[in-house]
Every structure is written in structure tokens, then in C-alpha cells.
Image (tube, rainbow, N blue to C red):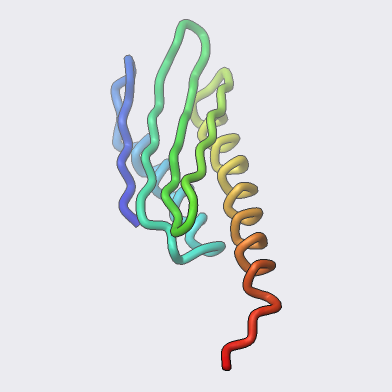
Length: 102
């Protein structure tokens, strides 16, 4: 999976990059067809915002999370994307469940 991390009004430290990379690598346990992930971390006044678009075969998943702390917003973001990814996987399996190859 290709991971693009950008920061808006925020200096991306190696610690933040490593944290995001570690968290997003966990998503691959649910689906191996993730092609690309775009992550944007930004600060707006007192809000720490993390946004992500995940490109999966058959869909693009998008989520936004905000918290007082950047690491907390990244954790919330991962939880949201993880739920969406599981839902997408279950839908794909349900569609293919009744098909028989002859």
C-alpha cells in the first residue's frame, strides 16, 4: 500500500509519520486490495484534524476525525476507516456468496 502523508499548518515530524504508518499498516489485515492511502493532518485553531482517503478495489473510503491531541485524532481516524473497510469487505463477500462458477 502506498501511503501519502501531508501536513497543513503543521510540521510533520518523524514520530508522526511513523505513528501514521504503523496504524495504517494494521488496516492491511482486513483487506489486501488497498492500493493507496492519502492522509492529511492539520491544525485549525484548537482542533487537531486527521483526514484520510483510502483507495480500495471497488470503492474509495473517506473519513475525518478531530480531537484535542493529534495522536488521538489519528486513533479515531483509524477506527472509522477500519469500520468502513470491514463493511466494504462484508458487502463484497455477500455479493459473491451465491455465485457458482461453472
